[in-house]
Image (cartoon, rainbow, N blue to C red; front, side, top):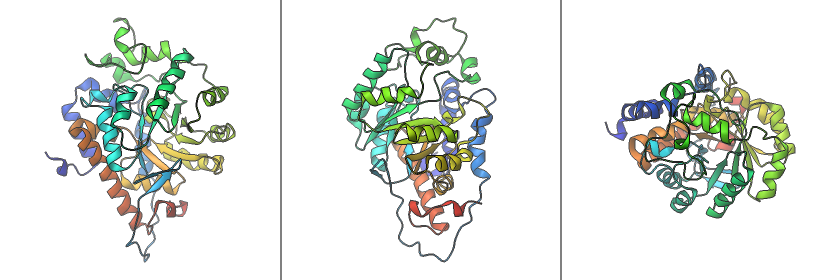
Length: 358
């Protein structure tokens, strides 16, 4: 089957599933506990209706927008996803090349297989760096300094994962990195864990390494380390959006970690409008979780998101065809977004508003 036969994200997922080892596919696709939030993230988009407008001149259109002052060719960013070399030997290097070719931003994960410096060397567009905070704060500070030295243009602090959600697929599979792969940015690796650990390798790693004491006061600590824009990832409550604005951060991701942390948390698209209202224009709001169609992008922007980010679809493209597959995923979403935007009577992302949502 050629890439031209893969007409939807669902097609790409099926093709990736057919060639990835079960442990790897389950790690990428899975959520926490009963995976209710995982399913709801996508299903909630399906419940929203588009009240489209007609007889508007949409002959000239642009899908471009800006995020933190950077122009992107489409309002779809690449979310931080770990261990991309499990999908393709080039991993994050292939993905960052695809981001540059598409004219968008990749958010590089702390848990990347490729080192930050190699990813940066392959980048042809701005990239951001996603940070986890470790019990060893010096290690986190050093990691951020490396990312900044490599050219990262924002830091995305994940705030919903200091305690790991139970991902039963990974526990059943006794998830570990395949032989020959490691976390190149970090001091410890999954392979160093005891063989008899009663968890997935990653779950045990997080329990031993991540700092559960992370709190709002640490935003000031982070600001003391860098002048980069700070974006918080993992906001689903309006009060946390208000606190983020008061803390002076530059952006927030409405995100539930792709349904991988608290099961029965709200779908991100359901949480979006209240968070936009609470932030009151004081910071940029983005969304990830469940975006699988261009119509999903339209709905998120109509409800106030500046842009969305996708993770799993990028992994499916990477698994099937490396850089070319990631480029195809981004092109597919952008073509769908452009078509739905036009069918709604809009010519630019900033013309989409909540009047469209039924």
